[in-house]
Length: 142
Image 1 (tube, rainbow, N blue to C red):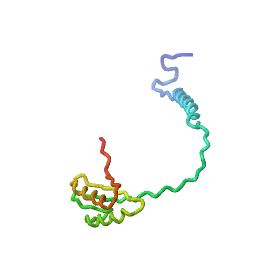
Image 2: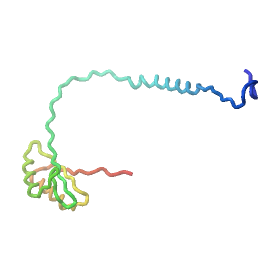
Image 3: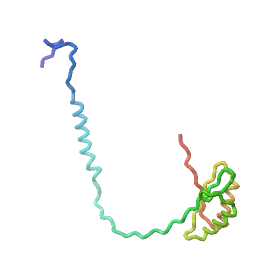
């Protein structure tokens, strides 16, 4: 192997070396190939299990949810329409007889007085609806 310390005869000092060293690329590709060859059988390996063949029974109907909203002024909304307390009580009484029993979901503004929410809960209790829930938003994490 001959090592030249200066420019060879007939070559310019500023000549660009046009050779690309592909040895690191080949090394990386071989390592990736070995990793894939080892991990593919692990991923595709499953235990042979004979699953049962069953026909499913229809599930019982889920109760319809009644969506009530209370804005910051204490106005109660059934869906998108505003209702008075008397209208709310009569509608709840009519739906309380449904089978299965309905679920009431209350969305209360965080600035509303508790008294307005208490009236809605009392109307649900007097109508005979026992499943009342509150809809909230998850806390914002920074």
